Length: 474
Image (tube, rainbow, N blue to C red; front, side, top):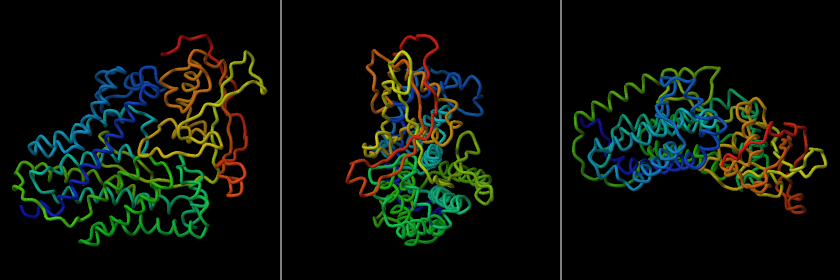
């Protein structure tokens, strides 16, 4: 069937696949390096406890069958190896069916991780990676030209990502309609980047332009993805430029990067397609069946998209095949941070020697400039931002974090930038205090060298110690 394939998108497919494999690699790497303290056997939210109360049908995962930290580590590092093989183009050096199975591997492996990741894996970009990764399975390799159905589904996914984010903003916080949200967002976003201070200090009229341009990119431009070339390429290019702007302004894990990857699949590169054989009948049948199934599953995401009660980042099936997306439906006007401190004193007093724990990405020391971590995802740092918004967001894990700091747990300390206590001398007490943070002005920055100014607000958690001495976890 001539209509089934679009040979002119062969380079778009190649770029998309290699870039998507790179995102997979980052995701598996983050899982391998952070899981022990978060969801490991002795983690804050252990996988064994989760799978004991949640059925396989609700959260399909290989870890329902077996879990150990060693097995999870091997699983994650194997995911890194598969991703690296895909980056190197192994899928193009094997038969079509083998290439599809190769792409199915990282999807199934990462699904197993996300479905037991609980709060630590509750972000929209997890489902976005899985949905894009599932579509990549059916995109084919050098043996056939790219199928039109899958190219359309990739644009349909990109449309829902952008249009959903645009609608949630218009329906949500009034500052998006008043064009004033960026007066606050660069300062109050979950994890600022090295340029966020400068973005925040841009003139307010330019912030209005930024918001207006965002509305155009998310509410008008996505429709143009379904128009003929070169309009579709122009629309995708606008989205790519917008996402790169967001990459410069903050740390949003791989959300911006995978959106760019999706947009690349819609770009028509001016390159002559290589000769390919006709698509096998079994391949056409599989692609058409999967396409019909995914369109049917789109019913609930579309209904959510059109609803006045639209929700962000929701999966409607346990395999996360078709999801709904959105970001920053509301914007905080004030930045709060939870500062965790410990002391070795026998009796905790206000004038005790309280020493502050430093996180890798979360603001702490006012003089420490934010760093760039995205697309790598610092899961604990992100959840600490939610903890500052409300203790309810951290109820399931914050106590576990404090307990592990009191034990100088090695795996937990690896998630931090620095612990103020020696490995063999954990603190006797740990406390948490809530501070208000704001970016300094140009004058303050010049005088003090500090990019943040912080003010004490209240006690977040009183001084706490272990009920009884406990052996170190590591």
